[in-house]
Image (tube, rainbow, N blue to C red; front, side):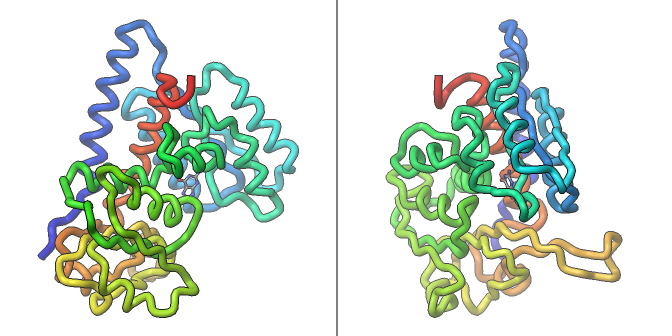
Length: 294
Ligand code: GUN
């Protein structure tokens, strides 16, 4: 059986390191890093994600501010909120939790965030800097995956990595980062998506698989090469009347058939998810220290 990539345990270690950094900042007379999160509407999954982010701030001693707005908010009011956060010297970084309601323009919202405070790394300035290997806030999920590969000392050089899913948040930046001349990186990368002719045939050649599709248990054991490293980004709610909440969380990977063939695999939950949250904290610390921009 494979080694489980325990994101929950790793996140705990990283949070301990962050708490120590906060302590030394405070000892030096500095205020702790401050993250703000804007949550529009009441999407249940988004509420959970934002709550986890705020709780993680508390755990490491960061300040946090949660700004809730009704689903009916107008575009202009949301943009005004973003401008206030851009201008507030006591906020180091902030995020607008996605998705936002359909009547709002997600692209305009992303563009309105000052790149210096864009700790999600979604602004095109940060994306472009990442693509060119310049200092940038890296998007939290890909950054968390890189950190996991690094801390488990997984070899990546020359590996054939297959990323499934081309979202701006995960798949596209992940493919770029794995191809960079760096560790983790130096992979030969194939980016698969809904129009790929034969995803199973592509996957069977993969040494490293990153699944960010958003379809429960899409990748099955017959698609995986013996010894592959399997990273599952999916967090899909699947109805289950027997579960306490009426649903169960399933990854994009069919764990039961894939795990026996993998060398390493992330569980869902407890794999990539907790690493994503610690990456956001890491970016917020960098913002407070002005490591990327001064
Ligand atoms: N929705 C899903 N993932 C993310 C994320 O990393 N950041 C934000 N702001 N929204 C998300």
